[in-house]
Length: 247
Ligand SMILES: [Fe+2]
Image 1 (tube, helix red, strand yellow):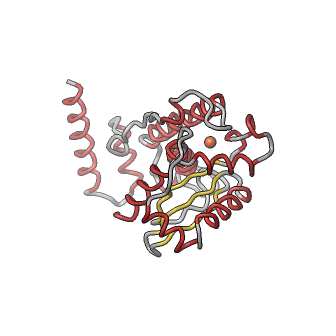
Image 2 (cartoon, rainbow, N blue to C red; image 1 turned 180 degrees about the vertical axis):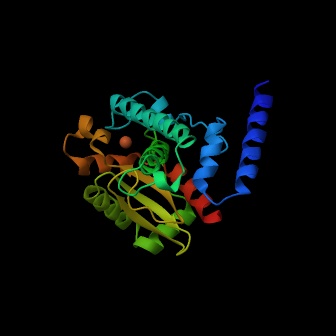
Image 3 (cartoon, protein in one colour; image 1 turned 30 degrees about the vertical axis):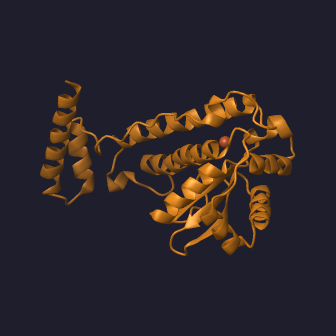
């Protein structure tokens, strides 16, 4: 029943699109017609839901990172998911008329800019929670270690650079695989959505927003980063690296 209604909506949406596209003199007209019929701008977006992570599910202190920090952190992550779903729902009915789009302020601008922050918040945290182990000692895989040595000189130099990048950043530091240059690099981020590099896949996400460490480390961000590096689940990082290289 639900499926057939979905299909009816899809057929109706496509039909509206085809009729309107025939006279695409004005994109605004397309949107106005679609909205007059109660149609959405796009096919449905998938609804994001919160994933589970062993570092959170453990519900206990992991090294010097407390269970309370992890639980609060996870709540923030759930908030980002809620915002992504909300923004996407609003994009379904926002005006696409050129006259309504404006670079100083417009609904579509606000939604699209804020979507990058919210969706960045989801993706960054999913890597972060997944990167954090539960205290077990792990080692980087052979291919990953060889790549780190090639691109940074040694594992210690990679760690020193990521630590400095994390101290210098205002939100994030990432180790990412650049598929164009076929190399790893530690990138800096001041927010959930700043300084992205196209065609680079993050394999380590280090959260340096205060909420990630204030409760347990106060202002000692460097000590928090040391603990993050100590707790890093190299099995997760290695799997991410191997998947990124295969792409
Ligand atoms: Fe965070």
